[in-house]
Length: 453
Length: 156
Image 1 (cartoon, each protein chain N blue to C red):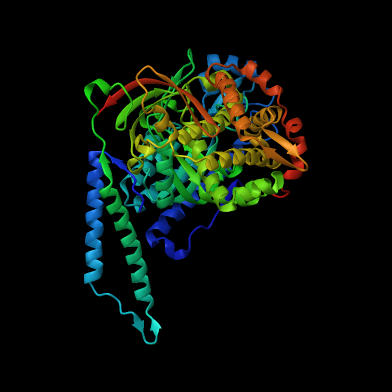
Image 2: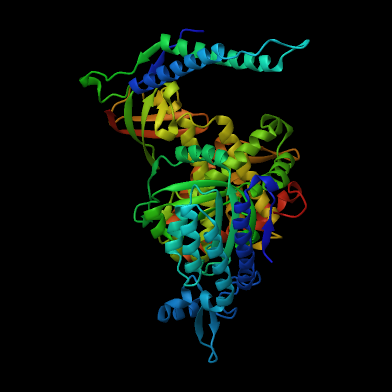
């Protein structure tokens, strides 16, 4: 069962009513993990969405005559004559979804908060029709609600063929108001510029980007399998909603905290010299790691090339995740010029990006689907090493920040081409030049042993 | 306190004056309400120590505000012939290569990049002062370099 639980609250922290609501939502979220477990299949690029013997060409051809084949909300199976048919999620999981919908309606009846009530009711309806625009729009209005709750099929990371099929996921958390306010201010400063888009590319501007920092109680489904520090919704596949209604990215405090203590900081200590370690105290690095999560998710909204997924297919997330990190660093250099970021902060952001790359490599064994994130970092590491921004000195590494920024600038131009105009076959050829294992093989000893999370 | 000049817009000055009045009111309230006694049996009263700490902070803030008000210079509209030049108070639209940015250059006290107000002391603020519409300027800070073209200068 794909479920992760946290206990951020003592019994007295929440009212009796709040605890009743959370109990219903917890039960709904837990149910979703069964649906996700039916979708995932780490042995096959198409997970359980497509028959394992179906070729890309066969699926594309079938999709032309029956668009449901490539719908985000269907399983593709073979019929008795060996042809391809589509089975909607709402049909396959009818019984389970009806139970989940009932729990959401019960939670809605208990909540007095109007936006949450409207959202839960709308989501209960949408789960049964495989269409989520109405409840996504309602969810965007819960931006300030105390309880943060997501349930449904949204992220596409386990469909590595088309990056199309959406996997079930759920999270439940409580808003940390003061950290949210602090990060909101920072996010606004970061997103205040108007970025230019590549000539000839199709793009959409996101109307509004909001942030929530939450004390998470539970992850279920895909988000329990992929331990993200944050998540942006509506999905990047729903750009029509981004354009008109904006998006919210949620930062998950327990993941940020755990990732830093168990991985990022130990990697930092192993990788870099004593001199570098003394220059950047742990508390400042930890604060910057939270900020880097905000930067990453804010920058997901910065550049939205509308047809990137259809051009790049399953390679989209490889480029998207890398590009977001690069844009984040570049965005912060602009903040430096405006006096809103310091030299020290830029340096820490670069160091954390490097350590985070090694985390993804270390986590790849337990979470093979993190390949999409690790590949991007492999590309960055290749450029940092060959550009001599990162160099081995005795048994550890030293960093040249000037060169590192030059690498970021150069690489972001290359990656932007693929995001804006690149096609699947050329993306595939490009990625082959940066094999993960070869790039990271000399870094194994810097990564702590133990369970990745 | 050293003699610094504090550049403020009219709105900024009004806010500083309002905040100063509030602090004066707070000081009056604190010193006219029940002030804790210094001694509690044979020891110094912890409530008094806390009160003393609060008053020290308050006095320090009042001194800061008084220094600002004594040395304030209002940012005013430049003469008509100088309004294509970037001075304090100018709202500037800049092409920075991959992005276009619009912000107002203000004194450090009012700077708030989240509200598109940057300090005249920031690298970008310093680099743009004295430039004109159509100029190119290179702005550098530590590891960041940007070639900027000044697209528009206006005064609100």
